[in-house]
Structures are given as C-alpha cells and as structure tokens.
Image 1 (cartoon, rainbow, N blue to C red):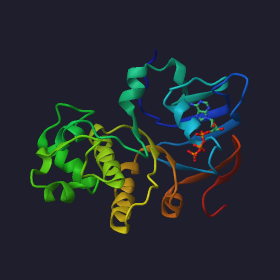
Image 2: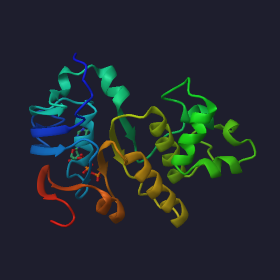
Image 3: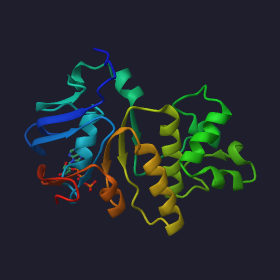
Length: 232
Ligand code: ATP
C-alpha cells in the first residue's frame, strides 16, 4: 500500500456502484467530492445508502466498480493502518469500553497525557459532566451500566476523535431523544470536531446541514441533488 503525502486531504467517490450482495446493487453510480477541510452532509430517507457510503470510505467493503480516492489515490492502494489512523469515526451509538473515563477518551492514543485528555473533553463539551462525577476522570465505566446517556457517549466519542486528531472524519450524528442541553452540547462538539477536517456527516439536524459546505441528497442509492443550502 501507498502512503499519502497528506497534503491535499480531498476525498472523492467516482461513479461508485456497490452492493453487499453482488446480485443486488445498492449504490447506482454515486459521485461525491469533498475538498480539504470541507464538510459534506449526507441526507436522505432510511435505506437511501448513507451508511453504505460511510462503509466504503472506511473500506469495510470494496466497490464493485468506480472508485473511492483519498488525495487522488484509490483507497484500495492505501495502507489500512494509514486509513485507520487518519480517518476518525464517530458513530451514532457510540460505545464505551470498560475502564476509566480517561482511558475511554485516550483509547486511540494510549500515551496521551491527562492534560491532553482534559483538553479534548473540554472541546467535546463533556468535561463539566465528567468533573461532576464523584470520581471524575477516574470513574469506572462499562457500556451496560453506564451513567452516560447516548448523547453523552457520543460526546466521549467526539473527545476520543479530537484527541487522535485525524485529517478525515466520518460522523453519524446521534438522533435518539437527547434533551435540549445535551443537544446544544453535541452541536458545539460537532462544530469543534468538524472544523478543519475533511468530513462526511450523516446529518439529522437542520443546523448541522446548514453548517456544512455541501449537501448531498440521496435516494435509493442515487445522488438526486447536490449543492450548498443556498442552491437547494
Ligand atoms: P438509515 O437512515 O436507516 O441509516 P441509510 O441511508 O444509512 O439508512 P443504508 O444503511 O446504507 O441506508 O442501507 C442501504 C441499503 O443497503 C438498504 O436497502 C439496506 O437494507 C442495505 N444494507 C445495509 N447494510 C447492509 C448489510 N450489511 N448487508 C446487506 N444489506 C445491507
């Protein structure tokens, strides 16, 4: 595999056809491009192919035809370790691992200092909540019996990603009923993690959509509209 020079940080899908089952095509020639530091919001009804596009960007699957490129280099020619190190993923249902909350935040960078952990938590808007716990950053967590709500877990996941400082970001915005305070915190944390990173966001909030540089509307595995929110 090749190393990227890391200078362009652009990502492209070019006429991508893909199906999980080779006999059932899901994406029917999808083309999307994102320039360095820009964010694209993927929107569309359930089953339209948003998660599938994320799966291809992560190279959990390979395209049937067309290509996915980072800085013009086919993702199939890029070292998987490079991808894993440089593409940050924040999932809708973020998972906490057993261990302390500090360990959870430094998961992708085990040698991170406490200062770095706290700085990431502050940027992700979860520091105050952690500090409010009797044992603070040393609070033991496991996903099953957690004091963290879904929204708070997503904030921890955002802190994790901020700490590893990836150039590229794939983010599936949490939707599940979060209260308005957490909602606002998520919005700010998202702004912090997206800033300066070439980002693909499965966007569920209008604000997120309006804040993105480009909106791509998917339907049944096709891009049916594309542009800024001024154009659409
Ligand atoms: P949602 O908003 O519900 O998350 P989505 O836009 O992300 O939907 P996808 O999850 O990409 O849509 O699904 C697109 C199509 O691919 C659907 O028909 C779905 O059933 C199918 N699909 C998704 N994941 C798999 C899989 N792992 N194996 C087989 N088919 C799948």
